Length: 311
Ligand SMILES: C[S@@+](CC[C@H](N)C(=O)[O-])C[C@H]1O[C@@H](n2cnc3c(N)ncnc32)[C@H](O)[C@@H]1O
Image 1 (cartoon, rainbow, N blue to C red):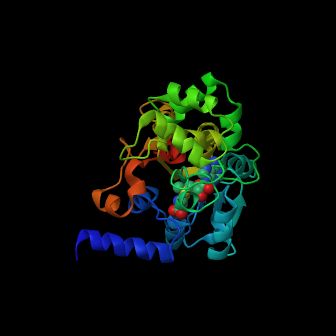
Image 2 (tube, rainbow, N blue to C red; image 1 turned 135 degrees about the vertical axis):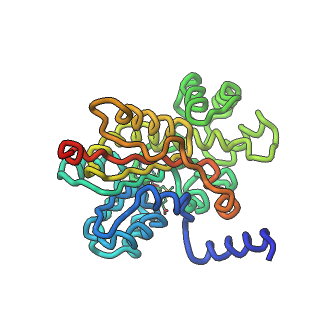
Image 3 (cartoon, helix red, strand yellow; image 1 turned 90 degrees about the vertical axis):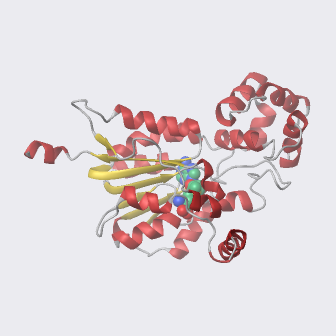
């Protein structure tokens, strides 16, 4: 069978059986190394692609907490998971604060950042450059701020910064100016047309970076990660492991820096790095799951200081 045919069959199967294809699944299982009886916190549980495999290994639903800020993901998890699993429908910073205050500790913590395939594929959420719909982009529908609010209220300098920082958009100035000229911007089609008018048509949709930038801003993705990450590290059991998959260089930098500050030869190191460089998807995975293209996995283990003292 040709590779093309295999790919097509895989995509059809995906459509029928699964809502989201987990990225770097084998690698996550290697670095998290879940063992029978382990406790597990998944702060971006989505459609349980990773969580179901981790749970199959820990076999301890009563020590598992799954978090997602998206109502549809939570509904899916409710239907799919053992009743003993604790589900939290909130953002991962609020969840981390709550669990930490309750004194919860975990052997395995996983964060698989960003959006899920249903966000991009399902109509009406406003995440996709491919379909025309209202400019929403909220992962949590209870939030009030939408992408349209940002586009229609930010000043030029703020828009340029957003496009540069979160979209790494080389033509940020021209796109920001055109957004302001064409206000009010209410639909994804209108926004996509602005980026196309600046860039012309290309292989990749010219509005991809603009959409990414807005999505990150609407959901405060970078801000939440920065504040939540130290709490996740605090919540690791001695010897426990944290794995983070990011899709944006800014996020990867935050993870790299947080891990570096707490590891190495320093006398007060709390972490042992499990990945010196970020782990990326193998070619075989990219064939079946193009979303894995920009995924970067970093993992670290909490140093068991008790063990060191005993030596
Ligand atoms: C890449 S998907 C995770 C997919 C999941 N690992 C799986 O295999 O099914 C990211 C998920 O995290 C959720 N999410 C993103 N940012 C979040 C945040 N700050 N707090 C809680 N959930 C978040 C999204 O709603 C989405 O369902």
